[in-house]
Image 1 (cartoon, each protein chain N blue to C red):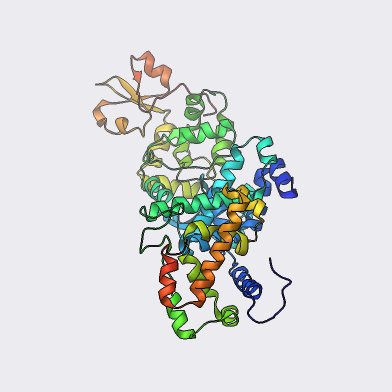
Image 2: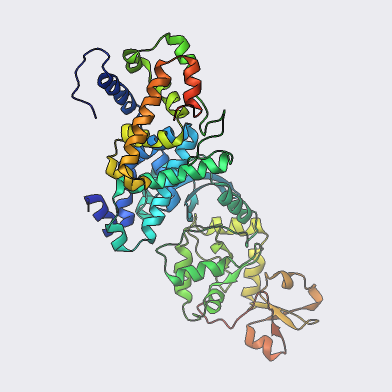
Length: 203
Length: 276
């Protein structure tokens, strides 16, 4: 049990603000990259922290002692994001692939950024590409996007991801690998390929 | 992560490192206030806003469980310090109350004493809660003696403790402790700016305190109607409708009952001890 979990067990109300200080940024980052817009991400983060508090307040001590906070909070924020998406856009889901021509996430300006930049390579990508990369990420189907976000943006281990998502590590490794490949394709190839990979053309 | 690969040109490993580093660069910080908002929602931190009232601008503090403090607006820093000392929770200024609380506060300030309003009474004794809940039953424009509260909550001898609990009411105006006065018609204490403010609030609500004191001076604590044979506190809405020829003054409930009157079911006059 880590020190914060022990403190939560000892005095939930006293220690919970430290959980907020320690995890709000990463939960917001996950929410932002999974949902795509800052306003919803902010509400999802708040919602996740409130759900976490209420869950901890209702758990018995053994259950709290068994919690691994990073993956547990990840599950909480992903559930909050799912609820948010379901409420806002009932036709899309973070669990299933978007219908053709639609993404769970409002598309950002991948193509405009490309037009301004000309032909990107990996150097250009590192230099100016945060917005373009975020846009490309938003275009990934959730099944690849979420593992990529958790592994390479949040920095969870595969064991933590397996705990958070309830999928085998091998599956997650394959999904991350596929997700990275799709991102690379989106960022380097021409718009025609971009369109194909965005809407489920790559399998 | 492939952090060991060197910069040999355009090998797959090199490209992956670039992409992974770029992804790590998408880490960001949460907007200021999102953590605070969560803490407020679960009741570990408070927020406050200013609200206009008949006696001037108020500071109204709250969290996700309900209101936590109502006081006359003054120096914000001093308010924040005293709120922290009183509740143990930090408090941040916000632009307005959440819609539900705002509706409740506005309704209570407008005299609708039964308007629903969430109140955070954590850490308060059962006695205090029952005193405040009882005070909330008194309609605007009416007053009750301290002893009435004590009798109604089943602690008829705890008149002094009722006064203390009312003085500790953290949310005056919306929990109308100002509608509780001394049995002799004098105004009694008031935490929110003293007796003068209490007098002003009651006058705004339509209570004639001079008349009340005049009655008490002549030994009149209750008013009966000789047509209904019902006896009330003088400010009870039923007592106020009794026309002058039919008003019968009584010293106390025993005298009224001795004359064949029964107590009003709305204002419920009780036998009051001297302390009331």
